[in-house]
Amino acid sequence: MKRKKLLRKLADYLSLDQRSLRNKREKMRQVLKQLREKEHKLKKRMLHEPDPAKHAQLTKELSILRAQRMKGIAVLKELK
Image (cartoon, rainbow, N blue to C red):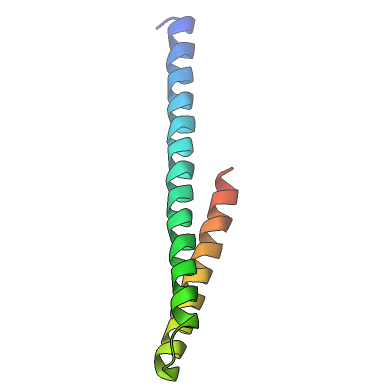
């Protein structure tokens, strides 16, 4: 193969990597947005829950959700 053709192939492969990385970041943003919405819903539900056992369960779920979201944010920053 000639040099130009090889360089063109290399550029195509590199652009594929960048496109896949961009798609991955976009999907991560969507998932993080969904987690944030779920976190807000849980907070609202927790505020209106009179039963202490259910309140404790919701608090545990909220802390797990928050930890997952923080991990996702860290991964997203690494992808940039």
